[in-house]
Length: 338
Ligand SMILES: C[S@@+](CC[C@H](N)C(=O)[O-])C[C@H]1O[C@@H](n2cnc3c(N)ncnc32)[C@H](O)[C@@H]1O
Image (cartoon, rainbow, N blue to C red; front, side):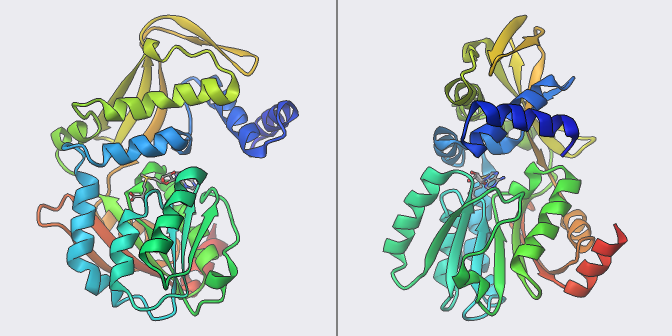
């Protein structure tokens, strides 16, 4: 963290006793002071955002969820065969846990299923329904930011092996260097010999990608604009959400979808005692979704000690599920080389 960011964090902490809120305020102020205003996509997922994300996954244009689920259903036995009895599955960013359910039906007895998410409300609700639907399963929800270190519950820490599960192409929301840092951090959390099962969206024609992030019903637009409502509610901002518009497009050079909120006019917005000027057309960059190939994700993972084990795709090659195993020897060598 830079000295300026630390000072902002301290200033924000002075106005609230809630550390998560102080962090949100500091990140908004720092992000909106940048020449290209930007905010981490993790802030899209308050309670309303998590519900809207689930709605996005049901839109006809949003192929990733149904494609990933179909690969999981088709390959469940092969994937389950990699997961030894007594293992603990740790899902990073579990959301509705609907993909985990497919795995949980296919695997042998586990010591625990640990669902990790920043969005507490959905996490707690889903843990309740999972316990009801899988009575013998030890379901342990953990509210945490997976970009930071967090303690595994004892049931998972004591398991003979831990299996990370990271579906939903959430890995694509990181800049590539941050995706590598996430995988390295996950290795520290999961330990030597861990397995990691990652769902990653694949590069494809721009038309399919642009449609997926601009659904006709406008659900993705509502998901994006909800960020402004959240800032108003939690940080006392005075955004007029109707004065902003959802923009999403494929940036081919960087192999990523970019999601922005564009100001429809010249305007000023006050948040936490600070005024931010918006030119007409100026945007807040709210999310990236990087698109990988099997090879490019394997190279990124290998660079931080995760050896590719197996990869699966659908017939059209739209989406991939990739399994990696952590080799502490390689990981330590990589860490020391940095
Ligand atoms: C793209 S959704 C995927 C949800 C689910 N895994 C799926 O595949 O349908 C991303 C999920 O990660 C959670 N999330 C995003 N950033 C996070 C962070 N930094 N720490 C923990 N959870 C996060 C969100 O709340 C959301 O549930």
